[in-house]
Amino acid sequence: MFVDRLIQQIKEKKSNIVVGLDPRLDMIPKHIREKSYRMYGKNLRGAAEAIWTFNKEIIESVYDLIPAVKPQIAFYEQYGLEGLESYQKTCRLAQEKGLLVIGDVKRGDIGTTSKAYSDAHLGLTDVEGERIEAFPTDAITVNPYLGDDCLKEFMKDIVDYEKGMFVLVKTSNPTSGQLQDLEAGGKRIYEIVAHLVHQWSREMMGAHQYSSVGAVVGATYPEQAKNLRRLMPTSYFLVPGYGAQGGTAKDIIDCFDERGLGAIINSSRDILYAYQKENSEYKEQNFGRAARNAVLKMQEEINGLLLEQGKQYW
Ligand SMILES: O=c1ccn([C@@H]2O[C@H](COP(=O)(O)O)[C@@H](O)[C@H]2O)c(=O)[nH]1
Image (tube, rainbow, N blue to C red; front, side, top):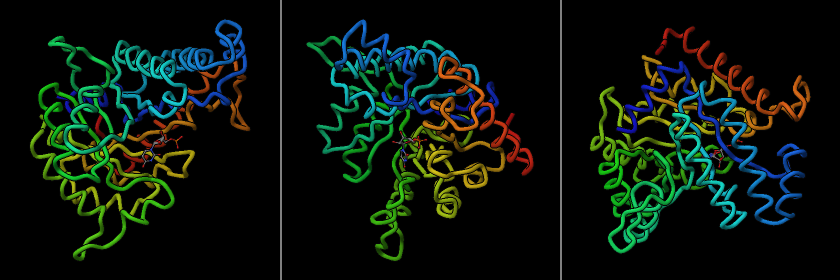
């Protein structure tokens, strides 16, 4: 089951960090871009190959330190088919390195359309009876806005293929409250979504009192996260917003349970582009080492605070 594999990886690597694979062309080291443009041209192929080269080195540099990666599909989709090919290759390499892959695809539509999304990202795609894997991912993010019939399609594949999903509950962006914090029947919208997620989570429980149905909860809203931990006791939290968006170890600490489990913390820009930081000791040739160092620093911050609070999971 996805959640059990995740917890096993977390314990083995003593890490609850997810590296977000969000390749931004303008932030990829120049020597990689130039080589790629020389070989393929300044076009979608050239961009996609630069991304792939960059991701390969990032994965090689951090795979032994983390349980999972989270490629954000938007950063690949913008380069069309070539970009999606890089997404697919990135997911495959990460899995080969023993990492779990959480596709940040934020899908959700009417039932029949959700089924197609789910075939592509969780299950298998049917071609005249041949069942083929389109994108190799272990879990995805989903948008709950369309309700039960939308999520039912993802649920089926989670059960059949032992995959996972993280439902958007309280997102990290500045205006997430505009809709998510509105009150309906005495409750906030995000609390109502949390209640639904809790119900869905009961259908896919693993061995450690957690479910393969998790929730996205932003690091930038610590008070709400504390409340959500209580409302969704069986859902693993995928927590974006650490680092570049301002979230700190203190802000995410209440996403964990008393055992130090229950949350995986994502950081993308702060890790991938650590070599560009003002005080960085690394040159752009060593961007992989800079990323590794950034993961180790984040691990120290989070594990240090967990230890202080007696929430030692390792
Ligand atoms: O509420 C959300 C949901 C998803 N994200 C995604 O996480 C990363 C964050 O990147 P950073 O560079 O660490 O800020 C990015 O892929 C977002 O699309 C989120 O930030 N908040």
